[in-house]
Image (cartoon, rainbow, N blue to C red; front, side):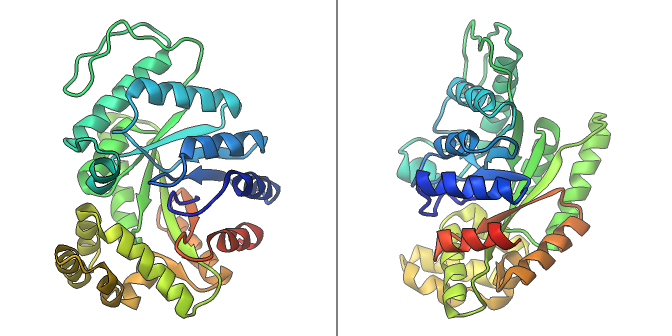
Length: 318
């Protein structure tokens, strides 16, 4: 999984995609924040590969209309020969409002409406829909079969919603205990709703595999600093057992003292929620997640230092 914060040019995306397929990895996922368009990078990957899965992890439900999401997903699924998965999420107010200048409200309801609309578009039938956020009339998407839909989930409510609505649930910055909780929630919701095969559980695992050194630790702290700008992630860190760190992050953000945030991020938090070290450390953590209920680990080379070099090593050696 290539983070949307990493400096991954289209040329490098093509090269790494070819390498990943040659190494027989299971899939390539592209994130999106404020750098490059994930769907274009996914298209680059699709035309440079033949078999490997392609997905977005994630693009948000606020800055593209449901109709636009349906068209881009259908087009990428067609381009890839049915290998595409549309990974969606709510993103954060900092991105949606601060960067895009759009109103961030009722994220859970918006996700629910967007997925309902996507299923309607992908049916190929004409339909109308009246919702709180969207009300298309006599809409239809002709001739483009829809892909699988994945949904990112941070809190319990979104996990349960994703277990009902999506084909795949994506976690980020979670530990083994959290994975076990989510696996149980997904299985419980599947039983309640009568789904024979519940959604897959995927885990985005950030990794710096160029050594357990000061540069790796600073890369990890820079990554957590970026995520800590969002209240939703500070709440996540607190729920995962890092209440002290989350409270200090909140205090420093309120004081506009971003430069001090790395100093409050503990090594224990880093080691619990990502990997800093070598390939053997990464392999061990992947096995642990798989043994605790994760169906698919998305290895995310840490985007905050030596990104392409890190990605190269992950693909070549993992």
